[in-house]
Image (cartoon, rainbow, N blue to C red; front, side, top):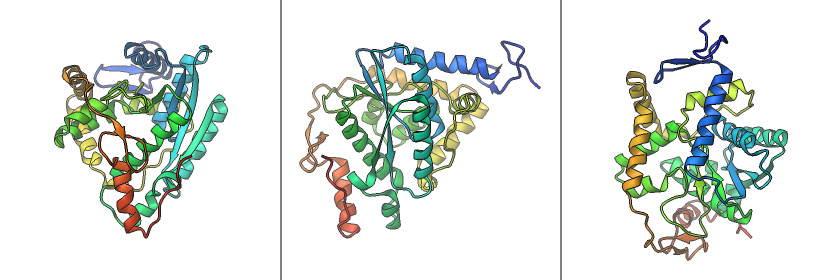
Length: 314
């Protein structure tokens, strides 16, 4: 058995970009140090007392909650509140919610679940009609609900479990789609504009590789939902993931170099203070256009699904 590069314990992971082996303890220490450094360097929780954590029940979000809880449990000035979105994918999301609920109960963290059926259209209903890329609908509806729920819960920020792989993939997709403004939205802390009705998103895991999060979760005995979304095979992200992983295998450190390029570009993009944010004419949520993307998509779906729509959020 190969030994850890820092002690005599057995290694559980090899970092190709550093050429070092890590045991569970040293990998945990490194991961927690990276997350803590990300939070401090980017001011993710500075002057913020109620921190939301979006959890799906998967490895990334539960590991993020576990680490943030460990880092902040002695800080009485801050409270963690977990949020789970039920997209309406039978047999898939049910298991994730079960893991999320059990984990929050173990840590003693307040947990809230919000459903597509109340504020959008369940994904199973959408896909029965085969409406193109499922991730487009899911992403728009999920972000809309998360922002609405975060305001209702009076959160100062919402932590999202995007890891290094997610950042690299999103960056590559935005380049391919020629969507520079989306690059500015996907920041470690905050987004494109400052608006009281938008709850800032923070990404504590943005510099942690996915495979290291898996190893961290397994070492710390975090019980997570490990199934893939049944609609994921239809997404553009899949070939992008395969391409970046192949480059990482051939040229270790590729993902970190992509991250550094992305962060350098963020410094060059001007903050859009002049961008006018008003209210969507349909739902009253913040929007830069008359009808927000959620309501635009919902109107089309309601026509195609014989008027099936959500209940209003009170």
